[in-house]
Image (cartoon, rainbow over the protein chains, first blue to last red):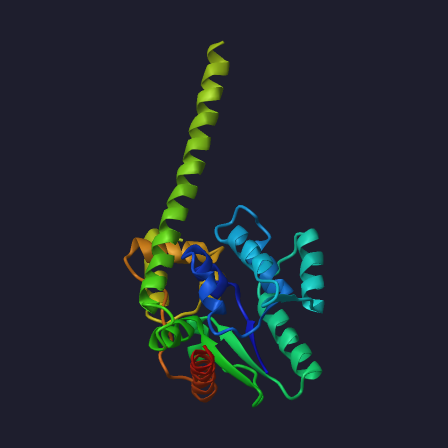
Length: 189
Length: 76
């Protein structure tokens, strides 16, 4: 049996803002998301993609599971204490791989990685684990006629990211303008 | 970070020269900022080249996914 383990937030966020999370389930391979990766992607509800990721997991609970880890517990504690949590998603992913392979020694895992990472950093692996990047995953889907174009999905993610970021900046600017206006009204009264 | 530095980093990311984790260390707070930067420059997130220390396990991963999709298609 195979599982896909998502090792980082970037594949989830890329596909969420492109409104293409569904492509992750096209191979019908169960997906595990370490709790710290999930928390990182969804803890700020207003963050782009956060709601979509949460809803997608709930809708597909038969295929997508959040894996509790000790790192995830530590991450929560650090967040409560306003301490840094950078890198904890990856640490939780390593823990999740260990947990899965200990419980299922005959099984195999496919680790979904960020593209630029997979090219440079040597991943900790034994022969039961294989790697695939988001881009490679999409290209295989395209090659097997499951999606029309990997590049179109990545372009859509970048275009949506731009729109979302512009909207966020506009919102901040509008809020500042409203505040200034309120202050002016108060001083003229 | 100046806008020129930011653009240089985003271009380096799009070319696969630096990772998202490197961008985080250099001041990008979330991945949306990266996607937005790519979108503004008319670029897209990179697709990794088949080079580096993980080639064998990546080729294995691609083969596994292909086999899985083909088996699924045959079952339908």
